[in-house]
Length: 156
Image (cartoon, rainbow, N blue to C red):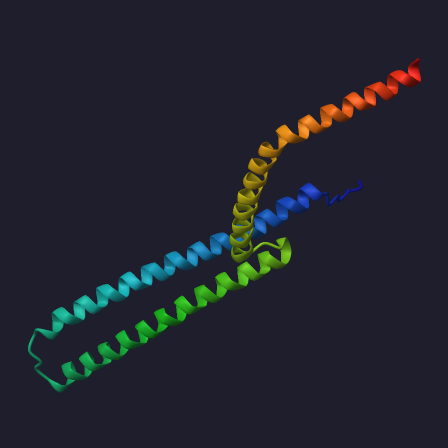
């Protein structure tokens, strides 16, 4: 039994699409995890505010409140770092796509601007062309009549 392995361009394209989809899924999962963490952090902060209204009875409860405040601060710092990590990951993915496909958000914006400008220039040149087409058609008809007489002379 001989197994034949072929790597066609279709298979390579499917593999690259799968890798792309995996990276998009990973980014989406990270974003949803981040949003869940933000929501949990806000909920934790609300509970802390509710507990502050209760009178403190012992030094142990004061120490626990201080620990909760420190935890809140660490969670905020963690969320800030996670947001930076997500931004960094998006930048890396954009650079990878730019390297692989020669496309980035900036180049797409530049291309759109270029196309918009070239469309304006094209429409201006078309309007100029339509104004001069009457004159050029008169010129071409006079040239054609001269050419026709030359051809008739050679035919005779």
